[in-house]
Each structure stands twice: as C-alpha cells, then as structure tokens.
Amino acid sequence: MMMISAILVGIVALEHLYILYLEMFLWTTPRGLKAFGTTKEVAEASKSLAANQGLYNGFLAAGLIWSLLYPNEEVARQLQLFFLVCILIAAIFGGMTAKKSILLVQGLPALAALVFVWLS
Image 1 (spheres, rainbow, N blue to C red):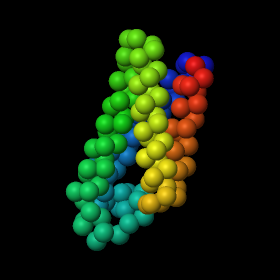
Image 2 (cartoon, rainbow, N blue to C red; image 1 turned 90 degrees about the vertical axis):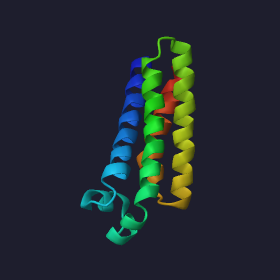
Image 3 (cartoon, rainbow, N blue to C red; image 1 turned 135 degrees about the horizontal axis):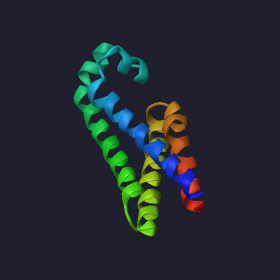
Image 4 (cartoon, helix red, strand yellow; image 1 turned 60 degrees about the vertical axis):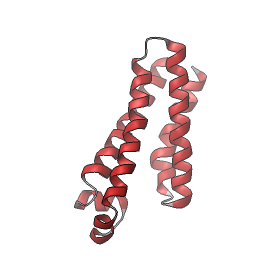
C-alpha cells in the first residue's frame, strides 16, 4: 500500500511540474494555447498571471517531492496529506471558477493519491 501511495504522490508531483512548465514557459505557444483553451491575445495579456500560477504549481510539486524524500515516515505522510489536500482544494476551486476539466485532470489524481496515503 505504501509503494502505491508513493507512486501516486510521485505522479501528482510530476503532473504539477508539467503544469509549471506549461504555465511558465509554454503559455503563449500553440501547445499552451491548446492545453488551456485560450487565444494568443488572451495568453499574451495574461502571461505574467500564468507564470505566477505555474510557480505555485511548482511549490506544490516541491512539497510532494520533499515528502517523498523526507526520512521520517510519519512526517512524510503528514506532508503528503497536507499538499494533496491543498491540490484537491485548488482543483475544486479551479473546476468551479475556471474550467470543469480541472476536477478530473488535477483533482482525480490528487484524490486517488490522498486516499492511498490516508489508508497506508
């Protein structure tokens, strides 16, 4: 169970590193425009906001990576629970205010990881 939870936490961390990359570096590229369903004009106007969002996603990923490397298992578990709940809350908020697909893309992996961490 602990191995599955660690793998899921790692997947969520990698996902948020990818989101960081999309938001900070690819926001105005065709790949970024497609990923976020926006136009070139909107992307150019919101470039600095997207970079800020990307940075926050990076902090979430860093917290999860920290939790996977932390030597004390109980502290590591608490870190995982905290950061996964933060991601889940952000996904719910994003799904309600920005794009419904955020619930599936970010919320579902975080929820799955959270359940396995909670049960381990």
